[in-house]
Length: 461
Image (tube, rainbow, N blue to C red; front, top):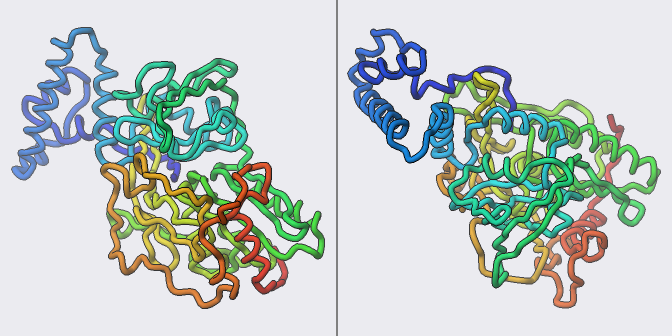
């Protein structure tokens, strides 16, 4: 997501191209004027004018005939939100409160439950619970579908409305009804809202010689937190430090500039990511600056189906530059850029404006990043319940590139042990416990690969 301060034409669908009767109605009703008459004479816009007349007629009938009075503000905001959510899963209208909440969240602190969500088939789908929050402690899992909040169905609510209901005053209770793959009946989880202060980077030494760093999301604090964590671990390990595990599993993404900065910490040169928009001149490209904070230490990146957006940018950049070995399973596949722009009245809109591309020209959208070494977290093969990745969502944006162009270049630099890695855990593998790293099969295989990689040391920045 890219937060842009500029003002876009958020009301163009009712103000920008209206003429004739609808022009008169809208100007009389809302007090704004239309485009110059010369534009109105364009016969090619006839269908647009007809549909805008239809909009005005429906608007007027709802105002006059709906069973209860409805404010003009609510009708117009609902119409705008419908226009945006009808485009793709990630475009939406943000009312003033939601817009403020989003700005707070990107700063890494907000009130609520601590879950990243999207919407599918009328339900709220959990992309990932955030570490050490009410949601994670209550057992909310990636892939869960929230079907009701405090006993009231979420059907008919927009994503923003559902999120607003889940947020609230700290220390207040909320009950989520959840449908979970493999569960025979819905689950009811009672949570207590908190002020969510996201600890975006968690770190520790593994075996005294590997810096393990997990990034939970990309907020304004991420790059600085990552650099601070690495410096602390390097000081703790001294000359014994021989590599880095960067854990991006279940990281739903966040700010584009932070994903670029994180990638830059591991790269000396070359492209990190590019974007391509509707207009070729709007495309952008970001390159790494000289210097690698690790001094060239081996890096393994862990990814899974919950790794999305900014996480995929980092994984794709390090994979294309052969800077890291990716271990895990294919990522989520959210390769689109959302520009968030303020609108008059203190609200805003989130609009998909571009696609991401890795340095080798691969589009992340709807395909994701395929790991270099496939390793699953569990042996369980349960039937799928609901969408698992971007490609499963309704109205998802197409990839935009031929599938053959999205295949990662073959690697001949993997350590010999990589071909012996078994992708499924053994039958006697202990049940995963986040407090016990030895139960994390993907992490353990990543450590084995890392320790088999040749150490390269050079000056760090």
